[in-house]
Amino acid sequence: MTATIPGYTFGTSQAARSPLSAADLDLLKKTVLLDDEDLRYLRMSAEVLRDQVEELLDVWYGFVAANPHLLHFFTGVSDGQPVGAYLDAVRKRFGQWVLDTAAAAYDQAWLDYQHEIGLRHHRAKKNQTDAVAAVPHINYRYLPTLVYPITATLKPFLARKGHSAEEVKRMHQAWLKSVLLQVTLWSYPYVRDGDF
Amino acid sequence: MTATIPGYTFGTSQAARSPLSAADLDLLKKTVLLDDEDLRYLRMSAEVLRDQVEELLDVWYGFVAANPHLLHFFTGVSDGQPVGAYLDAVRKRFGQWVLDTAAAAYDQAWLDYQHEIGLRHHRAKKNQTDAVAAVPHINYRYLPTLVYPITATLKPFLARKGHSAEEVKRMHQAWLKSVLLQVTLWSYPYVRDGDF
Image 1 (cartoon, chains in turn blue, orange):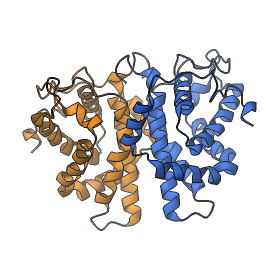
Image 2 (cartoon, chains in turn green, yellow):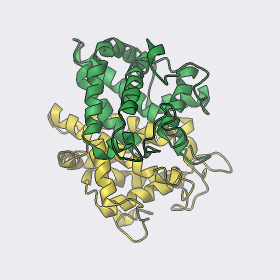
Image 3 (tube, one colour):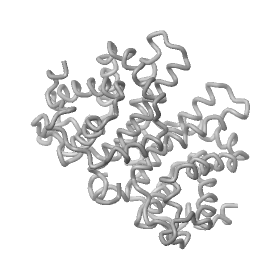
Image 4 (tube, one colour):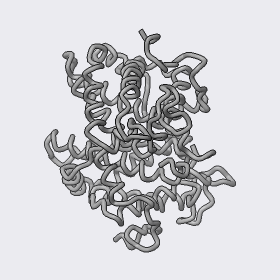
């Protein structure tokens, strides 16, 4: 199925290599308190979310569409209008990102692909994957701030498959840790040399 | 009382000026979903936390002390040992930061002081306030990842003064939004020119 997602290069030689080591990743996981128990709850969330991904994306895309300062990053440089092909292509990868986050392997291929995702937000590589002429850069400031709406709107979806309140809470907290970790990794291209 | 905190320059001409405008801050608040209701719950948390600040700092300092890769940033360049005077001075400001976050004015003076805090984490100004010879820079990667332990360990303290589960949850969520916003602002000195 993932072979049908344009620009999805997870686990391939086309994805960037992360500048971080496995030891770096371990220290980041320690800092954000992401442990094996969390990985177990993330995998539990995979089963919960699998058939809800499209509905979840509707919520997230609805939030972006309702905020012109966010929709801006999907608009064309020349006409300021949303670029439909770009929104569609990103949406397919965004759905796969939900499943990849929940799969929680967090190995070298995953680490590498986080760097690729960061580059695609930054002017270094934005628009290239989909060959579109959208605005050239997503401002850094919206990466960490979007952690809240993304994870808060996820929670009701986690509660829909009959899990206990404690399990829902654990899945949600594991997601929050994971998204914080990922946004940290995606920030690499934005940060001055030597400051990361 | 705040006059007795060395290096606490909130609201004074000695604090940096933020490069961001009030309009920038409004868009960030919209993105992280921080609204007037959250500010009300932050102010509720001020009453809850006021007499628990030292105990809260014990938890946070305990976390740092238990993680050598974090304690590192408080150690001396020459001997690699924790710099007691630095730890003590930061702790006083850290306690005041709890009260300032809960006061939730989020006006220009607050915005300016967030920039000052960012500079003091970054090599641009680290150690200068306290005239210490500690390691010269806090790596960017530990700013967004520390959002989780800081806010998660706060939650039990919010629950200790007899508020309803809903009120505790609301205070905690408002804190999470605020800390995400603040870490975003603190990151400014780390981000490449034009990328923020």
